[in-house]
Image (cartoon, rainbow, N blue to C red):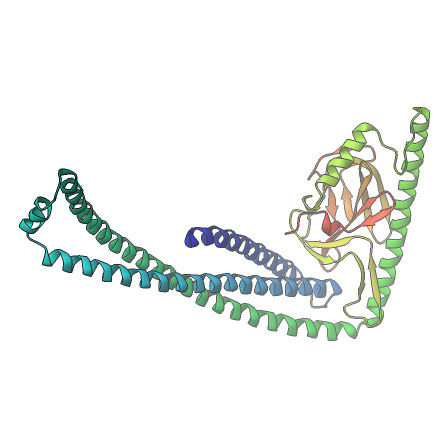
Amino acid sequence: MFISAGSPLFAQSKSELEKRKKELNKEITLINGMLKETEKNKALTYEQLLKLKSKINARSNLIATIHAEMRLINKKISENEAIIAAMEDDLEQLKKEYAKMIYYAFTHKSNKDKMMFVLASESFNQAYKRLKYIQQYTTYRQSQAALIVKTQQDLQKKNQDLANSKQEKAALLSLEEQEKSKLAVEKTQQETVINKLQGKEQELKDKLRKKEEAAAKLQKAIQRIIEEEIRKAKEAAKKAGTSSKGFPMTPEAQKLSNSFEANKGKLPWPVVEGVITGKFGQHNHPVLPGIVVNNNGIDISTTTEAKARAIFDGEVSSVAIIPGEGKVVMVRHGEYLSVYSYLSDVFVQKGDKVTTKQDLGIIIKDGNKESSIHIEIWKGMTKLNPEYWIYRK
């Protein structure tokens, strides 16, 4: 029971950790590819630093995952060692008991002794019971011999499992050391990039100011569109003789809104592949001391010529041009709104119905061959963290 109860849990946890390792390695490979796209550009960029920070974070998570897998293996090794010790004790006891039976059988081995034991019975019933006893004793001896063989086989298998676990642990230890060495190199690279970028303080401040101005314009545009949609929805509800608090919706829009909400944490990424390089909310600038960056959504770095895609079914509320943000597509999902910025070309227009993963446009590629998309999610007039809504890789 102890063996069978422990194994499925270990297998499940180990499977999850293996999947996580695979995903993190894929993310690191993707970032390396994106960094390689820009390596011909000798000028260091802020975006390269963000990608490097994301790679360091992914590498750290990979090391933590490897360590967690080793803890599981250590637990399995300890359990196996305890089981092996118990099985060895059982085997020793079985052998002692069997030796006693063999000795007894040897000292009473003649068929004459057995026959006399039966014939000396005082009644037929007693003779029958003595005969059955002799048969049962013989069967028991055979079963004990079979049990000893089976225990030896199980013990051998458990010892092999233990050896395999120790080999796996050794391989993980080696892998962990390799990843730690890579992490140390990447952290050194990060410090070098930060030091060099600090020499471009004014350039970074100008870029940050332009980005903040563009973000403010985008927020005003979003709020204006939301307010207009709410006004029109309330007018339509009033004409229909209905009223509702918040964002008035038709039954179809309410169904879509509920479906969007039910898929929180499972929505697809707005790009086929990418890595989050800009987190939601307020954060200290990684280069400029004392500067706080405020992000109304998240930024995802991706490959050049990548396409933005809808994260859920909906209707295009607006297609706009925001200086500094490129073209912007806003998609309504009932009470929710998803916003996609930094597009150079757009494939949809206002009023179009879109489906999940439908391409919306091409993401801008700047002079440094950097491509990233900015995505925001709103519920009414409230900004939400998109990272909680899209599938966590």
